[in-house]
Image (cartoon, rainbow over all chains, first blue to last red; front, side):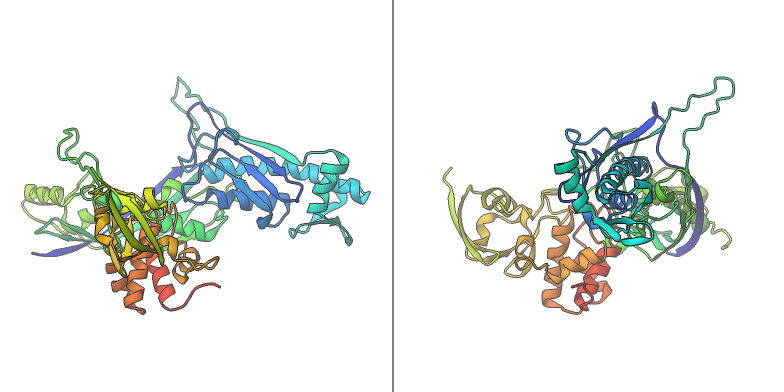
Length: 340
Length: 158
């Protein structure tokens, strides 16, 4: 029995969002009489952080503290339409919609403040701490709470805004087949190092090194948690998970978490991640979003690392011990490739 | 079929319920006592999200017959925080971004508490061993392991 080390690399170019009949999302923002703001979305946060990021985007655009913004999500009865949380589109599409809605609400808020301070709205600025003051004269100031109260009870104004972000459908050119399905691309490169046991066919992760370019990281800790967790999902898809192990034959499929294999805490490996920020021109504050791309480069990098380790090229996922052993046998033994 | 009377301690409080024979502890906790913190994942011991402590030992409540906890002490995540104050493990999970969708989190926290209660300064390998019966789909485990190590060494936010 020998354990063979191998290293593989993969690079990806990942489109943000999708193109099925256009890709819109909407947001509504309104202030409460307390001076706090509510963002209404039907978009869903599955734990990836959309509530946090849209809250930040709204607060930054309004010029108020992040604590003053509440995001109400995941209800299509109370929130305006969203295409959904998929295709890595949340931060980019929903973020842009929230930004547009917050910009409109800010306009009304500044008008209301201008009326109270008896100045021109163009001469006002927010301090990000819950106050609006005359530029260059911070003592001529009013709190957003007092503005909200004045708008509600005195001026009869709603401090609110509507936002939509739409990437229109890109038709296919019938002559050339050309289309532009995405406006914005993220990029990643990942190196995986594995150890392949030529007696059992098992593949163990040794380490991963990666670089992800995902526009501006609006919340670096959330980006990191997506990249760490997403890479695990990539490992899981590469080596473990499948509902149909003998596809297209439906036999021997897993029926529960005992048979549906996923890596446990003992199967993970060190993963060194570099985040590169190249702000996207059409992203909210330059963001693209990590999304599905977190998992994608892991699969081809592992397949390449297995080839590097034992010389077998497996193009069928997941790369189970059975497939590795059959391939080694068919080849008449292992053929470790040059280490690079 | 007649109901079986059952008394035990639930997070330090005496409870008395009637269960059908064969009822598992997870169902008793969730449906009869109303403690929704232990989650139903697989119902057969494969995922760990239903984990609770029985007399301080980690158990899968979905595979535990309710009547076997008669007279014993059952701890769930619901009993972990003290009033408004989070347990240091809960704070460490928040600090370290150790939860995303949150479905595995109750089981992870109970497994971590069982570990730290008997071994206050575990090694990384001991932490991995302690949570090896729990599946997490989102985090890749690394933030969970780091959170437990942070709680063990007192590196938690106030």
